Amino acid sequence: MYTPEINFLKERPEVPTTVQTGGVVAGPETAAGAESWALAIGLGVAVAAVAMGAFLYFQNSFSRQRNTLRAERTRLDGELSTANAELTRLQGLSQELQTIRTQTEGFRSFLGSVQPWSAILEELRRRIPGQGVWITNISASGDTVNIQGGALDFPLVNDFLLTLLDSNFVTSAVLNSASRVEGTPETEPSVTYGLTVTIRTIGDPDPELTRELEQRGAIGLVEKIRILRQVEGN
Image (tube, rainbow, N blue to C red; front, side, top):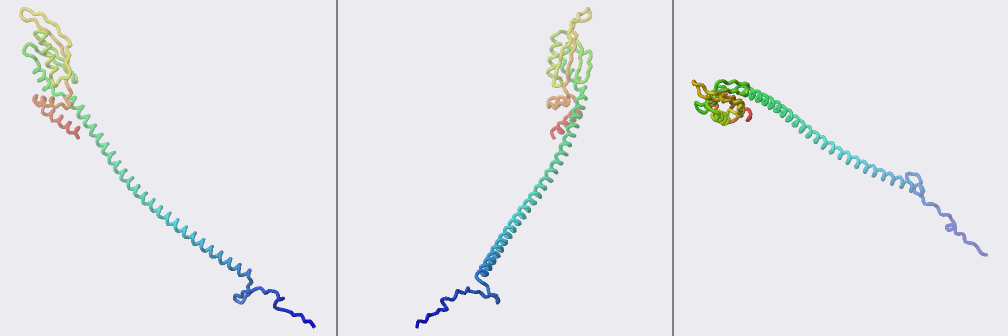
Protein backbone atom coordinates (compact mmCIF):
# COMPACT_ATOMS: atom_id res chain seq x y z
CA MET A 1 0.00 0.00 0.00
CA TYR A 2 1.45 3.45 -1.06
CA THR A 3 1.74 6.03 1.64
CA PRO A 4 2.26 9.63 0.47
CA GLU A 5 5.00 11.67 2.14
CA ILE A 6 3.94 14.94 3.46
CA ASN A 7 6.75 17.54 3.83
CA PHE A 8 5.36 20.09 6.12
CA LEU A 9 8.50 22.19 6.03
CA LYS A 10 8.44 22.48 2.27
CA GLU A 11 4.84 23.31 1.96
CA ARG A 12 4.90 25.85 4.81
CA PRO A 13 4.75 29.43 3.59
CA GLU A 14 7.72 31.69 4.30
CA VAL A 15 7.39 33.70 7.44
CA PRO A 16 8.71 37.29 7.18
CA THR A 17 11.75 38.02 9.22
CA THR A 18 10.96 40.19 12.14
CA VAL A 19 13.00 42.78 14.01
CA GLN A 20 12.29 43.30 17.65
CA THR A 21 13.10 46.65 19.14
CA GLY A 22 12.13 47.65 22.63
CA GLY A 23 9.56 44.93 22.82
CA VAL A 24 7.95 46.04 19.55
CA VAL A 25 8.27 43.87 16.55
CA ALA A 26 9.06 45.84 13.35
CA GLY A 27 8.80 44.58 9.88
CA PRO A 28 11.20 45.38 6.96
CA GLU A 29 9.19 48.42 5.81
CA THR A 30 9.29 49.92 9.29
CA ALA A 31 13.07 49.53 9.53
CA ALA A 32 13.59 51.14 6.13
CA GLY A 33 11.44 54.11 7.15
CA ALA A 34 13.45 54.55 10.30
CA GLU A 35 16.66 54.58 8.32
CA SER A 36 15.22 57.21 5.93
CA TRP A 37 14.22 59.44 8.83
CA ALA A 38 17.66 59.10 10.38
CA LEU A 39 19.30 60.01 7.06
CA ALA A 40 17.00 63.01 6.62
CA ILE A 41 17.73 64.23 10.11
CA GLY A 42 21.45 63.86 9.51
CA LEU A 43 21.23 65.81 6.26
CA GLY A 44 19.15 68.50 7.98
CA VAL A 45 21.70 68.83 10.74
CA ALA A 46 24.51 69.06 8.15
CA VAL A 47 22.64 71.69 6.11
CA ALA A 48 21.89 73.67 9.26
CA ALA A 49 25.56 73.51 10.26
CA VAL A 50 26.63 74.70 6.80
CA ALA A 51 24.05 77.49 6.86
CA MET A 52 25.16 78.57 10.33
CA GLY A 53 28.80 78.57 9.22
CA ALA A 54 27.97 80.63 6.14
CA PHE A 55 25.95 83.05 8.27
CA LEU A 56 28.79 83.48 10.75
CA TYR A 57 31.31 83.94 7.92
CA PHE A 58 29.27 86.64 6.19
CA GLN A 59 28.48 88.28 9.52
CA ASN A 60 32.18 88.48 10.35
CA SER A 61 32.95 89.74 6.84
CA PHE A 62 30.29 92.46 7.09
CA SER A 63 31.56 93.39 10.54
CA ARG A 64 35.13 93.80 9.22
CA GLN A 65 33.90 95.87 6.28
CA ARG A 66 31.84 98.04 8.61
CA ASN A 67 34.82 98.61 10.89
CA THR A 68 37.00 99.45 7.87
CA LEU A 69 34.42 101.96 6.60
CA ARG A 70 34.15 103.54 10.05
CA ALA A 71 37.93 103.89 10.26
CA GLU A 72 38.01 105.42 6.76
CA ARG A 73 35.23 107.82 7.68
CA THR A 74 37.11 108.85 10.83
CA ARG A 75 40.24 109.48 8.76
CA LEU A 76 38.35 111.53 6.17
CA ASP A 77 36.64 113.55 8.91
CA GLY A 78 40.06 114.35 10.37
CA GLU A 79 41.40 115.42 6.97
CA LEU A 80 38.32 117.54 6.36
CA SER A 81 38.70 119.23 9.74
CA THR A 82 42.38 119.98 8.97
CA ALA A 83 41.46 121.33 5.53
CA ASN A 84 38.76 123.58 6.99
CA ALA A 85 41.22 124.95 9.55
CA GLU A 86 43.77 125.64 6.79
CA LEU A 87 41.10 127.31 4.67
CA THR A 88 40.13 129.55 7.58
CA ARG A 89 43.79 130.49 8.11
CA LEU A 90 44.25 131.28 4.41
CA GLN A 91 41.11 133.39 4.36
CA GLY A 92 42.45 135.36 7.33
CA LEU A 93 45.79 135.86 5.57
CA SER A 94 43.98 136.97 2.42
CA GLN A 95 42.01 139.58 4.36
CA GLU A 96 45.19 140.76 6.06
CA LEU A 97 46.97 141.01 2.70
CA GLN A 98 44.06 142.99 1.26
CA THR A 99 44.24 145.38 4.21
CA ILE A 100 47.97 145.87 3.66
CA ARG A 101 47.42 146.50 -0.05
CA THR A 102 44.74 149.07 0.72
CA GLN A 103 47.02 150.82 3.19
CA THR A 104 49.89 150.72 0.70
CA GLU A 105 47.78 152.24 -2.04
CA GLY A 106 46.65 154.95 0.35
CA PHE A 107 50.23 155.66 1.33
CA ARG A 108 51.30 155.76 -2.32
CA SER A 109 48.45 158.15 -3.14
CA PHE A 110 49.51 160.35 -0.23
CA LEU A 111 53.11 160.45 -1.45
CA GLY A 112 51.93 161.28 -4.94
CA SER A 113 49.95 164.24 -3.66
CA VAL A 114 52.81 165.58 -1.53
CA GLN A 115 55.45 166.90 -3.94
CA PRO A 116 58.80 168.14 -2.61
CA TRP A 117 58.40 171.57 -4.16
CA SER A 118 61.62 172.89 -2.70
CA ALA A 119 63.53 170.08 -4.40
CA ILE A 120 61.59 170.58 -7.66
CA LEU A 121 62.25 174.34 -7.74
CA GLU A 122 65.90 173.69 -7.03
CA GLU A 123 65.98 171.23 -9.93
CA LEU A 124 64.38 173.77 -12.29
CA ARG A 125 66.90 176.39 -11.26
CA ARG A 126 69.76 173.99 -11.92
CA ARG A 127 68.39 173.21 -15.39
CA ILE A 128 68.45 176.84 -16.60
CA PRO A 129 71.21 177.03 -19.24
CA GLY A 130 73.23 180.04 -18.06
CA GLN A 131 72.27 183.69 -17.63
CA GLY A 132 70.66 183.90 -21.06
CA VAL A 133 67.42 182.29 -19.79
CA TRP A 134 65.24 183.41 -16.90
CA ILE A 135 61.91 182.48 -15.29
CA THR A 136 59.28 185.13 -14.61
CA ASN A 137 56.41 182.97 -13.25
CA ILE A 138 55.72 179.41 -12.07
CA SER A 139 52.32 177.88 -11.27
CA ALA A 140 51.56 174.29 -10.34
CA SER A 141 48.47 172.08 -10.38
CA GLY A 142 48.88 168.49 -9.27
CA ASP A 143 51.88 167.08 -11.10
CA THR A 144 51.83 169.81 -13.78
CA VAL A 145 54.03 172.91 -13.64
CA ASN A 146 53.54 175.89 -15.96
CA ILE A 147 56.61 178.06 -16.53
CA GLN A 148 56.74 181.47 -18.18
CA GLY A 149 59.99 183.28 -18.81
CA GLY A 150 62.30 184.85 -21.30
CA ALA A 151 65.57 184.18 -23.10
CA LEU A 152 68.01 186.08 -25.31
CA ASP A 153 67.18 183.89 -28.30
CA PHE A 154 65.25 180.82 -29.45
CA PRO A 155 68.19 178.34 -29.21
CA LEU A 156 68.48 179.09 -25.51
CA VAL A 157 64.78 178.31 -25.01
CA ASN A 158 65.31 175.03 -26.84
CA ASP A 159 68.33 174.22 -24.64
CA PHE A 160 66.23 174.83 -21.53
CA LEU A 161 63.55 172.45 -22.82
CA LEU A 162 66.12 169.71 -23.50
CA THR A 163 67.75 170.02 -20.09
CA LEU A 164 64.34 169.74 -18.42
CA LEU A 165 63.62 166.54 -20.34
CA ASP A 166 66.92 165.15 -19.08
CA SER A 167 65.84 165.55 -15.44
CA ASN A 168 64.78 162.55 -13.34
CA PHE A 169 62.06 164.74 -11.83
CA VAL A 170 60.42 165.38 -15.21
CA THR A 171 58.39 162.93 -17.29
CA SER A 172 57.50 165.38 -20.09
CA ALA A 173 58.07 169.02 -21.11
CA VAL A 174 56.25 170.85 -23.90
CA LEU A 175 56.96 174.29 -25.38
CA ASN A 176 53.58 175.98 -25.58
CA SER A 177 54.63 179.35 -26.92
CA ALA A 178 57.70 181.33 -27.99
CA SER A 179 57.67 184.80 -29.49
CA ARG A 180 60.28 187.44 -30.25
CA VAL A 181 60.30 190.75 -28.43
CA GLU A 182 61.88 193.67 -30.26
CA GLY A 183 64.52 195.56 -28.41
CA THR A 184 64.44 199.21 -27.38
CA PRO A 185 67.26 201.69 -26.93
CA GLU A 186 67.36 200.56 -23.32
CA THR A 187 66.91 196.76 -23.87
CA GLU A 188 68.13 194.10 -26.22
CA PRO A 189 65.85 191.92 -28.36
CA SER A 190 64.63 188.82 -26.49
CA VAL A 191 62.23 185.89 -26.62
CA THR A 192 59.31 185.09 -24.33
CA TYR A 193 58.28 181.46 -23.84
CA GLY A 194 55.77 179.26 -22.05
CA LEU A 195 56.46 175.66 -20.95
CA THR A 196 54.26 172.92 -19.46
CA VAL A 197 56.26 170.43 -17.42
CA THR A 198 54.91 167.18 -15.94
CA ILE A 199 56.59 166.13 -12.70
CA ARG A 200 57.14 162.46 -11.92
CA THR A 201 55.07 160.94 -9.14
CA ILE A 202 57.31 160.87 -6.10
CA GLY A 203 55.82 157.56 -4.92
CA ASP A 204 57.44 155.88 -7.91
CA PRO A 205 60.29 153.80 -6.40
CA ASP A 206 63.09 155.04 -8.68
CA PRO A 207 66.56 154.71 -7.04
CA GLU A 208 67.97 157.55 -9.14
CA LEU A 209 65.11 159.83 -8.15
CA THR A 210 65.61 158.90 -4.50
CA ARG A 211 69.28 159.86 -4.66
CA GLU A 212 68.45 163.20 -6.20
CA LEU A 213 65.85 163.89 -3.53
CA GLU A 214 68.50 163.24 -0.91
CA GLN A 215 70.85 165.62 -2.69
CA ARG A 216 68.12 168.28 -2.72
CA GLY A 217 67.55 167.87 1.03
CA ALA A 218 64.15 166.07 0.90
CA ILE A 219 65.22 163.56 3.58
CA GLY A 220 61.77 163.13 5.16
CA LEU A 221 60.15 162.25 1.84
CA VAL A 222 62.96 159.82 1.01
CA GLU A 223 62.37 158.01 4.30
CA LYS A 224 58.66 157.68 3.51
CA ILE A 225 59.49 156.22 0.10
CA ARG A 226 61.78 153.67 1.74
CA ILE A 227 59.01 152.65 4.13
CA LEU A 228 56.67 152.23 1.16
CA ARG A 229 59.19 149.99 -0.59
CA GLN A 230 59.54 147.83 2.53
CA VAL A 231 55.77 147.42 2.80
CA GLU A 232 55.48 146.50 -0.89
CA GLY A 233 58.38 144.07 -0.54
CA ASN A 234 56.59 142.21 2.22
